[in-house]
Image (tube, rainbow, N blue to C red; front, side):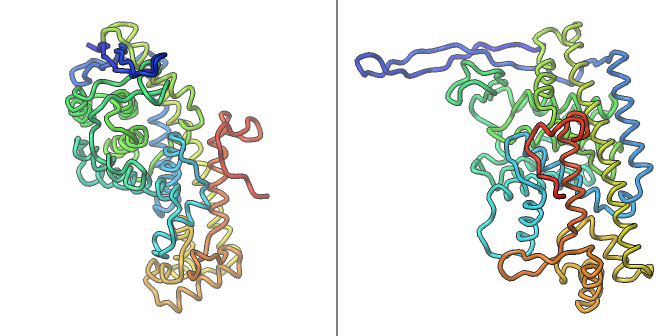
Length: 425
């Protein structure tokens, strides 16, 4: 049964005489109930939201064209997801800047890294690792959670804490110095290992619908808050592990964090509803779970709708490129490069040669044809590296970000509620 634990915090204050006085103040930490063995039931409305989300995810997977023809759009969505997950934590960077930083890292230009970009790129690396773990290990373990977190924080100022469970008390909101006025205080550190083991076991259970299971696991992870930093990003990565290993989203990543970043206040409110102090089988606790799972399911449905529009946009771009370059012989270097562009939005001639498995000369000739047709544009990465970017894919990517930043899903109806790149006219 969940419980609140009274804790003591020692506060040092300066008295009138200048002497330091010590006093002890009380706060309460929340310890959630274990998930394994707990019975979850959902109201009709919540069950309908879950079913709608799962139908939407399966539908896009079944009907998608570009997602099946190439993993390019799936990778862009994963990049968007990692970028948005970082944005929820206050790490903000535009798609264009991030893509250039990623290209510079891959080219090893030797220049000073963009620290903000490096932190988001670490998030992308961690999301990629999460997907690989879902494909290879097929189970969630505490060890795999620690590996994801370690990669997530490797470029941050708190890298010394990467992959390590916290040993002190954490809290959310209020003062940066103590938890006395915090909005939420997670469990004491000694409770964390057992709670995390229980969570891992729950993640591997198959008795609940995948979306409901992912929602509950995400909320429980956020409640446990097992790390000094990076809890939100790690928790959202684990969500995708679960959706992937369940078979619901086997080849692409629905960008649910893009929606959660837009609905941040509702996101926090729904998580708070999950933190019930009532017995797990009580109507109050059930209502809190219902509220959270419904919110998460609706966010999944919204993310699928926008991913579908993005997929259609990229597919239309590729068709337009073929018209500009017509005739395009099937299997030619130009044809293969058009297929590859959504995956490698910025590339060099050497990278193109590797992707095409053709000579440098053939790859360069194909790139020049695409430059002439204004499909690619030459840019500089670092001081000496010549590269080429698909500016139209980047524009579509930006349009996706802007649309998902609008509560209405349309910036003409409702303006973005969080920082997003400007749309170039």
